[in-house]
Image 1 (cartoon, rainbow, N blue to C red):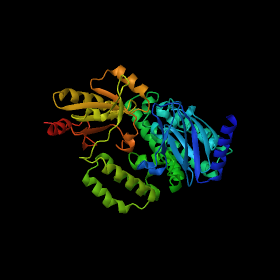
Image 2 (cartoon, one colour):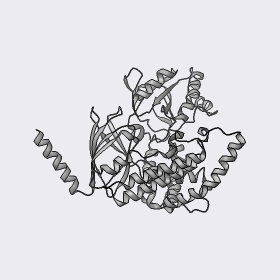
Image 3 (cartoon, rainbow, N blue to C red):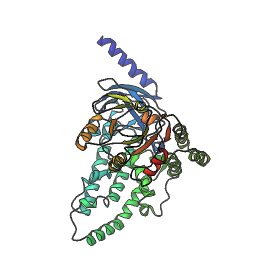
Image 4 (tube, one colour):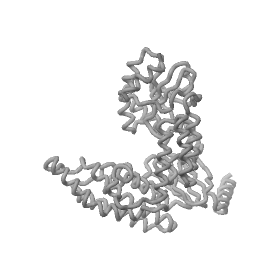
Length: 446
C-alpha cells in the first residue's frame, strides 16, 4: 500500500511540474469548524468582488487538496494567511488562524514561509494595533525604520524566490512603512503622556509636517500599476484617497488605481442597497470602466445583486443554536424576520447590538422575529461571547458559504428584512441605531 501511495504522489508531482498552467495546494487546516476551506483571490480585483473565490472540501481532520489553474503568479488568502502561488508550485501547508504559526513545504514554500510574518495594514502595519508604539514619536519612528530594515534583510536572504516576488515584497515593505508613519497619529494615545493636550496637539501637528516628505518618497516607490496586487499598497492608496489626501498632494496616483476608484464607486452603489434603480445606474456606468478584471467583478456583483432584490426568494442558510442543534433559516418562515449578521471581532457590530435588542423588546408585540446570526470563522468565540453577555434575542451561528456565494455578505454589520412568505423585503435594511428604523419596520408590519 505504501508503494502505491508513493507512486501516486510521485505521479501528482510529475503532473504538476509538467503543467506550468496549474498549481497544487494541499495540507491541513488547523482551525475552523466548517467543512470547507475558502481560498480567496487577494489581488487588486478583490477590492471589487470575489468571483475568483474557491471553496475546497476538507475532511474531519482538516485535510484538503486542490489544483488551481494559473496563468501567472497570484496572491491568495486563506483566513489570515497570505499565499503566493505560481504556476507549477506544489505547496504543502499547515494553516493556522495565526499565520505566524503556519508552515509550508514543497515547491513555492520559501516565499510562503516568508509571508507568514506579513503585517496587517488595518492594524497600522509595523505598529500592530498600537502595541509597538514606543514612549515618544521619535522612538516609534526609529522602531519602524529598524523593523523595516530587518524585513528587507530577511527578504534579501531568501534563495528560492523569483525576482518578481522579491520586487513585489520590497514594495510591500515600503507601503507598510508609509502606513505606519501615517498611523502613529491614530495610536497617539499609547505614547508617553504629554505635558498638556495643547502640547500633544502641537507635537502631532509638527510630526505630520516633518514626516510628509518621507511618506511622499515611499508613495513614489509603490505608486505603480505593477504593485496594485499587494494589499498593503492598495491600503496605502485607499487611505490617501480618503482621510489622508494631504500626504499625496502633487502626486498623480497610478492609472490602474484610478480605474479601481471608479469601480469601487460602482461596487458601493450595489453594496449599500441593491435596487432595480441602482442596478440600472451601474449598468449605465459600466461602459466607463475598461479594465477587464474590474469589469469581470462588476458583472459578478450585478449577477449576485440581481438575485437579492426586493421580492426575490430568500436564500436558505444552515444555522447552529446555543445547544449545537442544526436548523435552517427557513424554519422561521411564517413570520417577518429582522436579521443581524455580525461577528465577535467587529466593533461596529457590537455597537449596534444594544440598539438591535432594544428594538426587539420595543416591538415584541409585533409579528417580527429578531434573529442575531454570528458569522465568526469558528464557533467557540461566539459561544464564549454569548455566555458572557447573556443576550435577550434569538442567538444563532452560521458559517454557511451561502452567506458569501448567495447573500453577498462582503461586509458586516448587515441587516436583512424578510417577509412571511420568505421573500426579501430588503437585503440591506437600515441599522437599528438609525432613528427611522422602527418607523420603517412598523410601516410594513402593521
